[in-house]
Length: 623
Image 1 (spheres, rainbow, N blue to C red):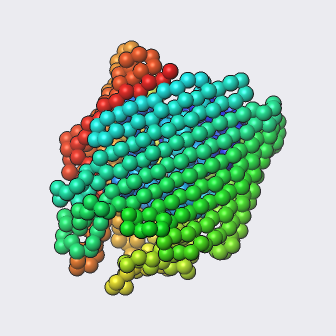
Image 2 (cartoon, rainbow, N blue to C red):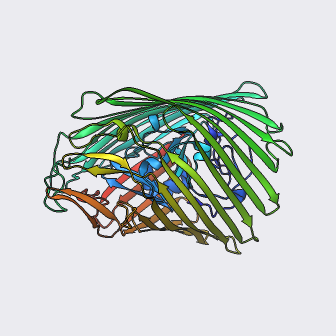
Image 3 (tube, one colour):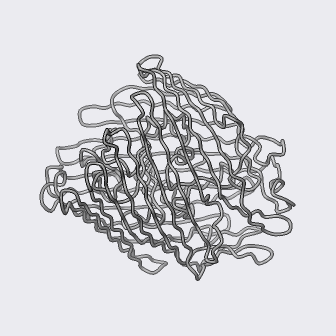
């Protein structure tokens, strides 16, 4: 894993020559870069905001097969919730819908909905990038706590391949790709079938899930100055679960085993991009149009909720003192038009629109001091206009020490569910106001003199206003805005150390103090999360062994019992996973992993049992 402690990051993926939204803009070929640095790429050593990167190589060595587990390995990121189906990803203690999730630079969910990672595998992923802290100045609403960008594989040559894994089900994917002199095309698809486990822990039926997916990506260099790209993806998921009827009498009988409970989900996304200009020019133009649709429904519902986002973006990249590739001072200008609509089982078609204008300045003020400043103004048809901002700086003290700091302001719009959902126990509130987050952080990066170790520690503090919370009236709950602010602060640590050429150690730790307005701890936000991992490779690099430990403590959760709601501190737990890879041939690799090696009984939410020990073996081939 690479976090903001890495001052050198090499570009390891051949992406389309055309950018789609800001995240996919890879044509600006800076040497060490962070693809998700804002409106355009930026050198890691210049980047002042806190970030983490997990590459495909690291994911494979650790035996990680789903994005939820990959994110657990990063500082400042917490993954927990009501089972795998409703697992939420929180950055710095924010709500799940305060994190904007992108896939190849495009929102993963339509209608500004919170994205659920339950079935998203790592089969087709090249890298995962996480920006921590408010990013609305660059990416708009929902980027309040941070941004997660999942970059998938693109055509790197001509060939085909795939992988198959068997265990408590199966996980299979295949791809074919071709690259010519001026164009590339890659088609991939797969299926995951996880037989699951009994969420209720009452020896009932297993609650499993399945996911089928497909993706197409392509790029074409039409002329020396003009290029195009296309990205299309589709996914269909089925989840089984156990309900909470509200009749439990203690923390161990909250769920009721039910073989007929579950939900369906679908994802559709299509993006076209164009780029005009060369890196040797002072101005490069980017244009993209995208459409993202998310559908979901419970087994018991006939009509599905459907949320859609249509977006049109234009960006100009301007080098003030040279061409865009080498300029020490760069300005990016963005204009965006976004249309969202929602229709559901209990809500007729509802629309909202937003026009946004943003500017970003990046400058090398000295050889060792770089700054980034972003400003965005949103004109909304439903809510008041809003200006978000972000400022960051990186200062290289010497060859071993680098300081980085950032501050920002962001806004999160109420979700469609909070506004309009209706059920037997929940009634939406169409009069909700957006939440506003203010944040500041300060970090220090240290590299050992021999270059084998890199460590980073970041302190942050945030304040959330207009927090949306639910009020229970005896028969149902309704969301409303809190008048007093909620505060969060914490420490994020990450580090890697190569003991020698064959053995590498890594660690990440997060201390989080997330409080309600009255000083009580926020639920499902662990106070302590520690991750340790070690990777050993044979001298010929054919065999790789990995072990990782995850420790969680200080997590509070609310249980809904027959006597009412009870909030209590959950037991701490530690989970160990191991994995092995053996390169049988240059293009064939055997894989194996054991999750929850010691068969630990643990949970992130009351009575939602986590999976028992499970063993998977597989093979991966590329031709």
